[in-house]
Structure formats: C-alpha cells, structure tokens
Length: 224
Image (cartoon, rainbow, N blue to C red):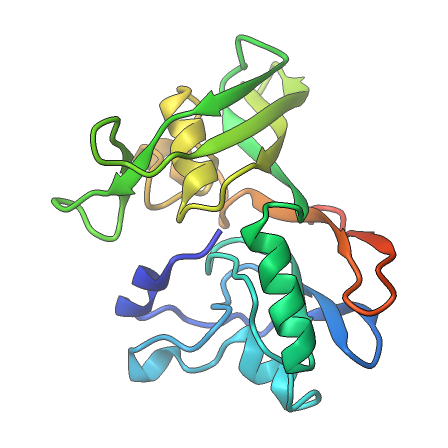
C-alpha cells in the first residue's frame, strides 16, 4: 500500500538488499526489505530507495505500485513502457491478486471476514488516515486468521486488499480492534514497541504476464 506522505519525514534506509524473485526481458518481481522507500522522498535525506537501487542494475526499471516504507514484500517492476501500461491497467481493473501477512494484537473474533470501511486522510493528524463514512473512499479488505499465540496474545493473519488505499491494511485492522505490532503510526505505544519493525509483509502476488498472457504468481515468505 503506497503513501507519498512518508516523504515528509527523515526515514533512514536499511542496508538490507532487495532480492530478485523473478526476472525476464520485460519485468522484474523483487522482494523489498522493510524500512526502505519504494521511490525517492522529497526530503534530501530520503533519496536512497528501492527503485534507485534497482536502476543501478536495470536502468529502465519503473514503478507501477508501491509498498510503504515500513512494509516488506513483493513488487512488480516493469522494464518497458508497454509492460508498464499493461500492468497499470491490471491494477486499475483490480485483477492483480495480492496477499499480505500481518501479526496483530489480540485474537480475532471471526476466523475470516471482510472489512468494508471508507478511508480518508486525517486532516488533523497528517500523514495518518482514518475511517470516514461521509468523505472516505470505498476501501475493502478480506482477512483470514492463520494462527493465534495464546501466551503472547498475538494473531497471525492473511490480508487481501481488494482496493489499494494508503495505509488501508493498517487502518482496517486497527478499526477491527487489532493494531499491528511494530506500527509506530497507528498502534498504541506499548503494542508498537513489541516489534522493531512493522509486522506487515506482501507475501504473494498473481497477475497476467503482459507478453505471454500466462497467469504467473510469486511468493516470498514473511521474515517474521
């Protein structure tokens, strides 16, 4: 999930390298580490980012979707304008399937469900977002409980964003009463302190290859 407002703060870039999960002549699928912007920020100290690192090896790589600075996981990087256009249309049509893994506080009341809550920027608390039935954009997330750690009172969940709003997964889980561990923006301080990183990872992506038209899918296990 993208968030251009993260560009306003100084965000130290991790030294952890990205991983190439798939490569052909027209596109890459890479695994972005946490604590790395997808694109350069406006602040002079936020210029180190995923796309600039990738472009050292693949000069024509472009960004078609983003992950938050704090989120790790899979990203498609087109290498040609034609592929950029094709993948962009797939995202607009919501035909790209993505799954995330998150660790949240508490035990979910239901094993699976759908969160359908409109989201809008919180004008009083930028760069945060909030549930806003009156002015928010339609936002939908499907969730499934994977496991529950009784001793720690943590749930491991799979999240599927049907829409792609900024901070959608974080705000939707918060609205459900289950903030993500390590979430310094939304979780109460004690819950944010339970992990040195945001416990959110884009583990799976499925889309149509722009040239072959074959359905291809990739996964990268969560590092937590």
